[in-house]
Image (tube, rainbow, N blue to C red; front, side):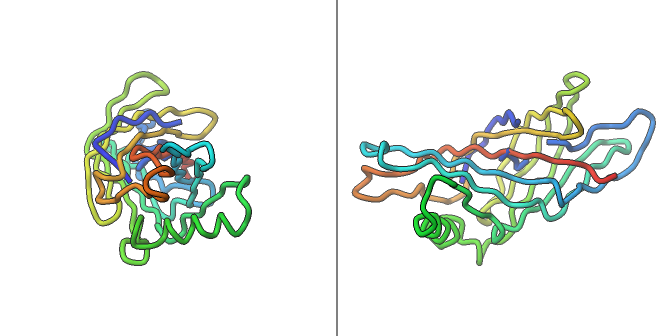
Amino acid sequence: MMNRATLSMGVLAVVLGGWMWPVAARSESRAMDVSRSVLKIRVFKSGLLSAFAHDHEIEAPIEQGAVETAGKPAVEFRVDARRLRVLDPELAADKRAEVQKTMDGPQVLDSSRFSGISFQSMSVEKIDAEHWIVRGNLTLHGQTRPLIVTAIQKDGHYRGSATLKQRDFGIAPVSIAGGTVKVKDEVTVEFDIVLAE
C-alpha cells in the first residue's frame, strides 16, 4: 500500500519503532514481545462522495521480531498479512466484513498469495536520547521498497508512523461508483513495539 516514504511513527506504522536502541555497554539481540507489539494501517477516504464513505483502521500483531544492540544496531520484524483485521467500530458488522474481504482479496493485499509483511533495517541513526532514524527495506504485497522511519521511545514502547503509497507496492487504491467513492493512495502505517524482558 505505499512509496519511498518518510515516516514519523507514533504505527504503521512500519514497516515499522522500538528497534535498535543500543543499551549502554551491552551487546545483545533482544526479541520483541509479540503479545504486545502491533502494526496498524490507517486508510483514508477520498472522492466526490467521500462524506458517505469511511476511513479504515486495520491492525495485526507483529509475529516475530528482534533488535540487535551489538556493534551495528539493527532491527527486523515480520507480520502475517492474513492476520490483519479491520477494526472500524463505527461500521456495522456486515459492512466491516465486506471491507475485510476486499482488503484480503486480489484487488488489495492478496494476502493468501503474499502473506508476509516485513521490515529489515540497513542503518540506525540516533538523534537524541529518545529519537532515532531507521533506514531499511519494507516488503509488502511481494514487493520491497526503501523506507525511512523516525521512531520515538516512551514508557517502554517504541512507536513510529509512516505515510506510504499503495501504488509503490503494486496495489491500486480501491475505487467504486465510478471513482466518486475511493480511498487515497497514501496510507499511514503505525508501529507500537515492546521488547521482551
